[in-house]
Amino acid sequence: MRRLMLLRHAKTEHDAPSGQDQDRRLDDRGRLDAAAVGGWIGRHLPVPDTVLVSTAVRALQTWEIVRQAMQDAAKDFAPPQVEFLAELYGADPTHLLQIIRMAEATDPKRLMVIGHNPGMHELALALSGSGDAAAKKALHDNLPTSGLAILDFAIEDWNEVAFRRGNLVRFTSPKLLRQTSDD
Image 1 (cartoon, rainbow, N blue to C red):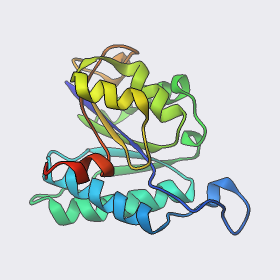
Image 2: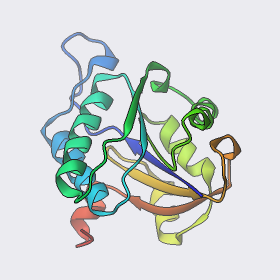
Image 3: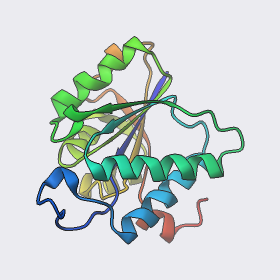
């Protein structure tokens, strides 16, 4: 069994001072949302073994806040292995799937990817073959900033991950966390 956690970066400023999209930083809401999702992950163990993070500033900042919130919330926090990958920026679902399959090299049981739409949303939809009906409906509409899709795969090797083979276990976002008392 393998678990994949797809996390879209948190909310950002509209324009970076540099004018470059990759340099956009988190805004105040983004920082709060990333902390909320990271805290939720830390309270719903186990945390990921490996995290793949886009090198865009907003993804890096999202990861740092999520990591700290997971660490603060988890009783027994083991820091995951982290890889920073420029190719996650702007990647389409097929390329993202190839990147996930390469996790076979380190073979984590739980893998988190922090990236960008539209690729992350399209990937989550493409991987979801079964799962919680309400989660599938909510995910179908959007993978918002700080949105988290958790999929389980009945496989032994990351190389076996394929479209429509995932079981969508959970979809959450800061908005959904505020609407429920699911700590």
